[in-house]
Image 1 (spheres, rainbow, N blue to C red):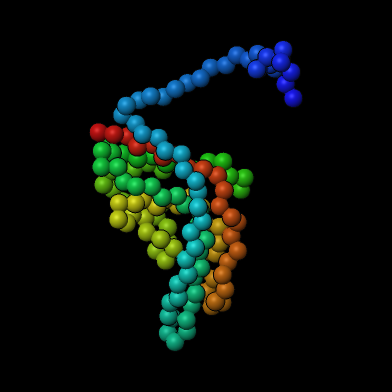
Image 2: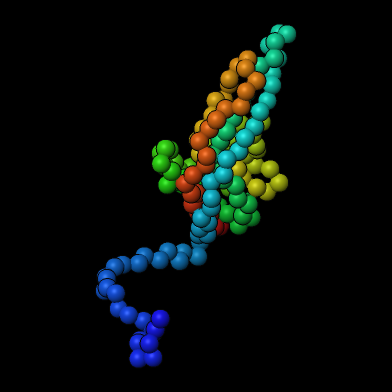
Length: 145
């Protein structure tokens, strides 16, 4: 409880630091979560059916009609190295998911993959893979025209 003579705030410590602010009007920066995509597919080899199962870490964001180019940096996961991709607006997504787990670009939305956490071709066993749950963040920088 605070007594009537106590201050609203108490000084705990003094620190000095520098804050860098990037207010470049030609950039938009998005901080996004990383999600897990999951997809399964089957394929025929002769008369035998094969199975593929994928678990992929990825993020999605909308296309910006004013974009000149894009850069995405995935970071902050314990079990995956940081990864950066860049591409020119209008070009193909640099790291699309497996086709049965998602699309690299659809309906104005980009989906960029970071890492696959499961087995991409478990062959003849129709079982799901157990990948690590998604973690980390994605920073998207949109460079404007």
